[in-house]
Length: 122
Image 1 (tube, helix red, strand yellow):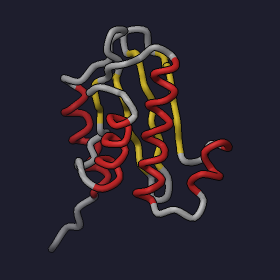
Image 2: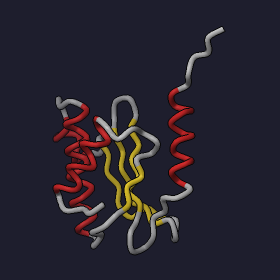
Image 3: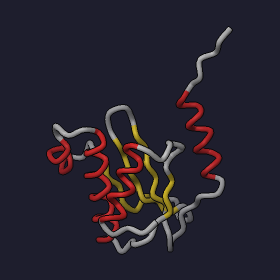
């Protein structure tokens, strides 16, 4: 019998493997990415204190008007620019990227590239 692969379970396994080594510190917090079927969410987290420093998503009121009618990749680019702008405003310049177990293509790559272009260092 052929078993169907649960892609989300495979992603969670990859994420657990990555999280063993990737930790956010006060000097270099963790940029955590989560993407659902229709939206994308980003947080910058200080793991030593266990707090979220900055967050952005395609569902926020101020971003909802900007992402309306755009493709998901274009939405990810806008969210990446916004997270970088908010992080720099809070004094965060360097982060470590936690892609959440997702492959580094498509929306995840576009988000990180636009955050880099907006001034964040990975």
